[in-house]
Amino acid sequence: MPKALTMQRSTVPTAERANYTKRLKTLRSHYAAANCRFWVFEESSLPGAFIEFTEADDEQTLTIAHANAPHKTLDPSRVYQEVEL
Image (tube, rainbow, N blue to C red; front, side, top):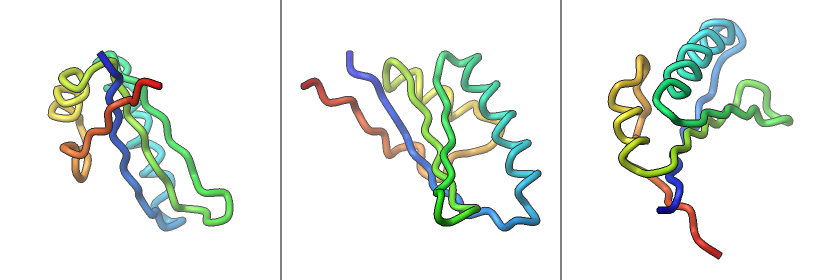
């Protein structure tokens, strides 16, 4: 079964960066416990522009993890499936 992935973009003002980082740490723990992988990248030329990736081995695992997350993803229904090459 192909892996499933969601993405979320966020723009975080400098004054909110500490709160955002705290939120991300909570999400990382949640997704790890839900058998998902969670990465966050910041655009190098635009500080405060982030993209969050959440991946699971299947769509059901990812969907359940998002439904139970302590902070909601804006559009968890936009799931991308890994393309077998």
